[in-house]
Image (cartoon, rainbow over all chains, first blue to last red):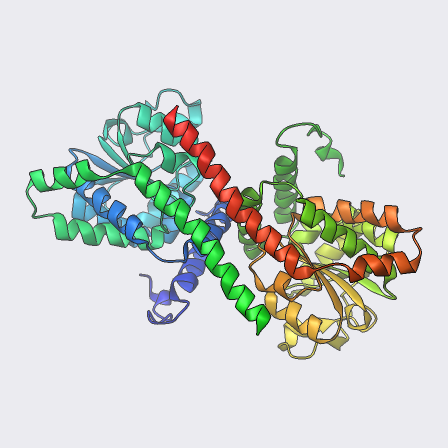
Length: 262
Length: 262
């Protein structure tokens, strides 16, 4: 956490929302959050509001399964775009250390300048090796710029964590046979529908929680991690999140009705 | 519509979404759309997606009632913030002409520079008189900067159209006894809950539709307009939109399930 964030006390009722806003604004100032990134952040906020702005039991379970996958992997890679770098830079570096994963920058609107700025931002938060700058391999089935990855990074990975990924790339990565963990607040969008492990949660809560689960699980035997992974039902997780949104709308309706009546 | 928009054919399936994106980006380039405005646009997109991205019959009815209110008013004022100016500048100028209303710029994060840029943008789209620059009156109950309005504008208005207004200002305006028409895509947020006429629709569809209704209604006798206004039930409109979102989630769930099964 950077020095100027110390001002927000962790028990502040709007802590998470203030922290998110602070980091996104810092991301814009540093040139790592794009216009499209700000709009995407707003879409996420709306779904998080409907989900109740907390990690649901079903999302927590998916985060535990994600931790097991990352610990089992031969070569796990955490993919980082502009919003992810702005929102959870230090948290990602910590997760990468705990599960021994690579970090790879991977942008929808790829420019050399933003790549460098994001890599620099990650290094400022403790990253030692940041991949994604060589771009010496291609994901099959995607147009030139969108397909670029590092040969010794995402291209070689068996498990990839892609938070806030777009649908086309998520599908193309899954078709390469990689085990894909997607974090997205909209359970209805294409990327979580494609994932082996869809996590319907805010990344600002999800990443530290995956790290905590990884710490809990790191001394477990492989057979136990394999059991956790095998028992997971992705469709059930998506359905739970969809139900949560419908119920969230109904609950907030009842709150508003009570206010209108009083 | 500015010249460079002519490129998008109106029958393009993503016409509305492309037009919105184009105008928002132009707004950022011109310095009239703020970072907070981009995030708010994203929140709106998420609710519009759940509402099915079209004007519902209930929203259309509210837009007709809004037109009747504006035609009946002694002094109607259309309030304009950064996103509104970016998204529907020409459409607002047209509505103001048809119902003989004033346009007043009214910002959440008020700076002289943005005020001037927004007024200029409206003038480029045909506005002759833009209020909000004198700021010689105050809305009671709001902090200094947020309270600023023109004495011969919003302060004097009997009917105000406030698209995308924040909750505090919406409440303070309603407490001044003004008839408030609010456009917002989230039926659960405080501003539409406060409004005499809540319109749960995308402003890019809502403003031209209010104008069309105003043209249809402008030769009706006052008694007929008063009947339309009196028959309107704001709570019913909010409930219809809330229901629409719940059903929208359920419908999109069914679509996704079919895709997963196939």
